[in-house]
Amino acid sequence: MIRVLIADDQHLVRAGLTALLNGEDDIDVVAAAADGNEAIRLARELRPDVACLDIRMPGRDGIEVADVLCGPDSELGIPVLILTTFDLDDYVFRALEVGVSGFLLKDSEPDDIIRAITRISDGHGMLDHTLTRRIVTEYVQRRALRPVTATRAIEALTARERDILLLLAQGMSNEQIAAQLFVEVATVKSHLARLLPKLGVQSRLQAAVWAYQNRVVTVGDAPR
Image 1 (cartoon, helix red, strand yellow):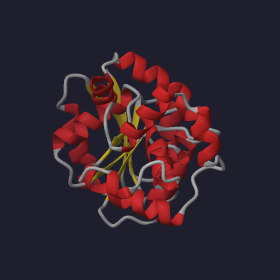
Image 2 (cartoon, one colour):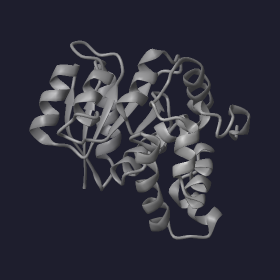
Image 3 (cartoon, one colour):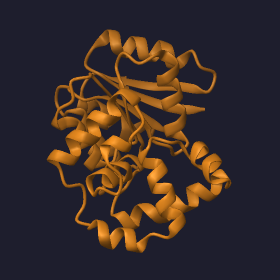
Image 4 (cartoon, one colour):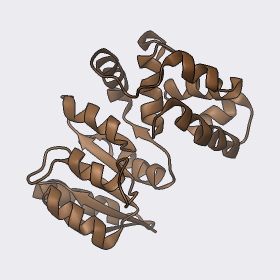
């Protein structure tokens, strides 16, 4: 059973997400918070498997909450899915730095939200395909992710790790990467576990953005 915490300041959104997720046999919404401070309190008390957070909330915004739940200094280690509108802003880039596990648009299909919760609980990232190119383009232009140079990092990667990084940057899942490289999914996961620290990043999303930022791949290479 995947235990989920929802945090959104809109009652209808909380109610809708709760009804949607509780309709699944393997998902249980353990709490729904109306603001950031309440979300942190409930997360510490209930230790959910996944936190589904709005970005703009009273008290503390979703990124501040995510930092407490999954940031570099977090003691909780709770994976976070951010729900956002299509109008991207600095909140999204801050979320990448914090290490959230995924982004989805609020108007995503119900099946996509359920799939995201499931994948994130299994340790996978989830990024809405309509956000990918905007996030990558904006982030490359405006942010530096980690103080690890491309040359040093790429030299530290094995040939297989470089292959996986390129496919990851194209938006492929672990399963798709495994099929492309004719290896087991467990092998891809093992390579990723070694790859991320070499780049100085914490998540699949950060690794993908790092690859674009450092021109290991270019925005034009990403599938539409």
